[in-house]
Image 1 (cartoon, one colour):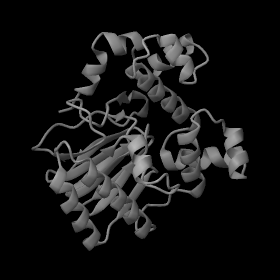
Image 2 (image 1 turned 30 degrees about the vertical axis):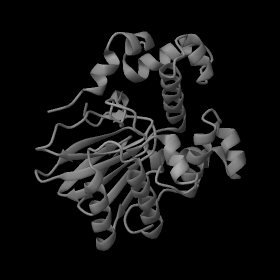
Image 3 (image 1 turned 135 degrees about the vertical axis):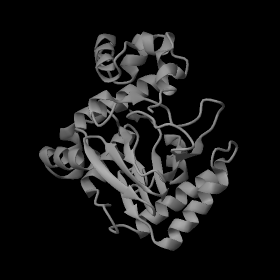
Image 4 (image 1 turned 90 degrees about the horizontal axis):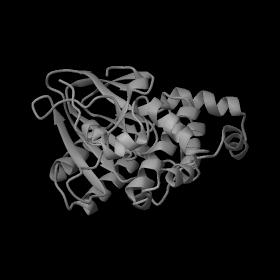
Length: 278
């Protein structure tokens, strides 16, 4: 699916094999295939252990190399576009509610867009912690400690590379996490700035428009409501913030290329989840 952000699919980060609120995956070209451009509800970190990589993140392209840490907030689509043969990274993800609990809802946390170069000692410490729990289940406590440590590293290493996420973007993401349907004008009022400034910095930092990001949040909330047992799609759509089921259907089709019923009932979701690129 390449670097076309309009072609992102939904792929949950956490494994489907059992209940888990955090997980660490290992990626290398020998270990498994690349995922297509995708988004998910879980915030994610990528620790580049070896090699180099080029990522498509929203509408932007980012180059990363060994010793760097990247972060993707919930709903931000991303894809590995190209890599050196020796690329090796740890992907670290966490249930969003668990993440908020671990970080005690700190405003400036790892769920914002992130790209920093770690100090060598910090890099080695994070690599060791990640390697100890990679691809394991039942490791929520060490995963939570790793997640909290990554947040601390972000604060300690601010400004070391491209960690230039504007304060308006960080606060916008925080406000939208609590109130996904908040509109641009109300955001601007809470942030004491202009609606244009909110949109401009958000688009630059996240790689997608504020309107589209809000749509992603609604789609992910709709999926969560259905997964929690709400079999009435119309009720779930309205509870997720859509004005009607027809609006939800239209947006779902535009974003994911299928109708909600196809996604949940015909195996399309499983096909998306299992999709890999050569």
